[in-house]
Length: 114
Figure 1 (cartoon, rainbow, N blue to C red):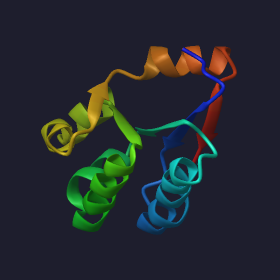
Figure 2: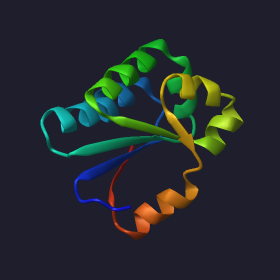
Figure 3: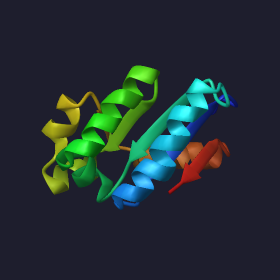
Figure 4: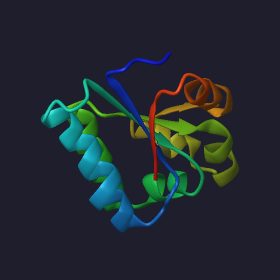
């Protein structure tokens, strides 16, 4: 699973300014400027509600997906918050992330937590 050219951003802070000025800015620029070949943003916790319900955030996710940023959300969180269908409609992969995250950590993958 670990690829030295793949960055994972674990997005857990549901502040829209943090999303826009850190998570989205870095993810998009990472691909545009070729700092990383692949970027996956993992939506975890309350960020699932923000991503599903905030139109500005949704628009930015759509723009980043067009650049090539991949988005994946924790299914347990999305289900518990009642936003699974909204995330899937946005093109976000929704899976159980506990085991894959553990594997990334054990492999010392490139993981940025925000």
